Image (cartoon, rainbow, N blue to C red):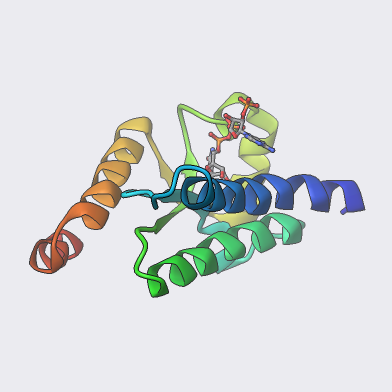
Length: 136
Ligand SMILES: NC(=O)c1ccc[n+]([C@@H]2O[C@H](COP(=O)([O-])OP(=O)(O)OC[C@H]3O[C@@H](n4cnc5c(N)ncnc54)[C@H](OP(=O)(O)O)[C@@H]3O)[C@@H](O)[C@H]2O)c1
């Protein structure tokens, strides 16, 4: 890992997340009703040579807990490998390497859409509905 790799990866996870969080409160005067973060399951299970990526994803999950403790909407989705859209789907070598090193589950775009739908529903539903959605 180079220092530049570390900063690049943390920047798109940390700085961008923090900027969105702050911008809506400081500049627009209101908090977001829905704030879904795309984290990765890789930091939970541990994948070889991805310490900086793990740090970024761990930050996202912790950030969600922090926002929720302030009564603000937030939800993090720990994705596996997405087959047909996104960065990994455009790079076959990377896709094979991540798959062989991690054994992560693969999902398709339709499943991703469904996860995002449930994430939004979970943040906008009342307590009783939230339980029902979580139980699905
Ligand atoms: N693809 C997967 O299999 C997979 C698996 C697990 C988790 N995830 C997570 O899902 C998220 C999206 O992944 P992806 O595969 O869709 O990646 P992607 O195709 O590379 O898209 C990344 C997006 O982030 C934007 N971005 C990157 N750095 C930025 C910065 N510093 N400031 C503002 N915007 C920035 C890019 O903007 P531009 O288009 O302008 O460059 C692009 O729209 C990531 O957080 C990733 O960790 C993906």
